Image (tube, rainbow, N blue to C red; front, side, top):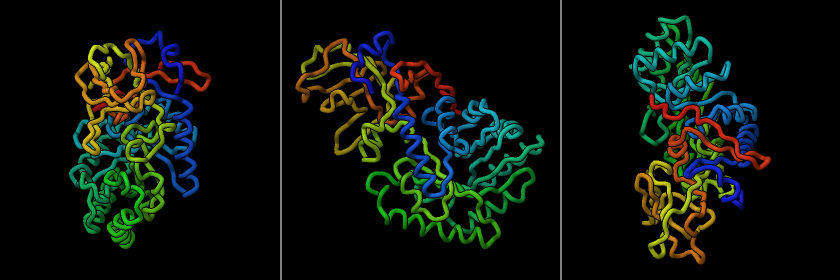
Length: 370
């Protein structure tokens, strides 16, 4: 990130989102190198950057396709010809199913499922079109959000999907979102996952449904994916940019944080405190609570400062521990707590290119909630 933030960005009103191209490329390359060493395919989750330009960067590095959270994101990403798209979310609803069936005419579409209800909806939508949708059955590895962990239930869903015309059983999707902090690096954490997963995998194989694809994801544990047996694909979202959650829990370094919100100090009348022109709308309202210290972002220029309160358009920053506090009118860069939330607040972002210029880019899939 630039040292002379004020001069580089003076023509751009704050707050705005800035992404360092060199850092993002380095993060992409690190993920791809890890995958190549372990024989994995890479399927980035675009819910973080929501950008066609970043997607193309990931594909150029070797990614086999993308993951999306919502059908609307899939429709945006379909601007890339022939893109292989996994909807890593239970896309329940007739309108969603019909949209996916239409996309499947020009793209390889897969959908993660954990109920026969969704399988039936997809099969019905496909019957209206001469297309095919691939199915990944969701395995619950311990988060208890979506998916099933019982071997019989997993096998039954695979068999049910394989038996429906127009659907193609492709394998299993795993999400390790419950592993972060020390748990994301603990051998015992992965053995616990394997004790659940191995009997389910064996049941699928015995029933004749050996998964062609075993796709696992979650940024905190991504570089330990090789510890989960039978995985051959990794999905990763946050790691392309990283954020303060990843930084705080030791899953990245500051040098790997590619996205910043650039803000201006607009008031310093209260001793030991400044107000910035970015509040909950600009930084996202998700808060990081750790060791009883409420934090809502990290300011690299002032690591002793603490963003402790957000209103819609204002941010409170405790600068009482700063030897030389920021001055009114000064620009600061903030590493957001949850970068996926933050990116979705902006229509555009500014890419700090490797030659030091700023290029304005669209957040192409912003606001795709459906």
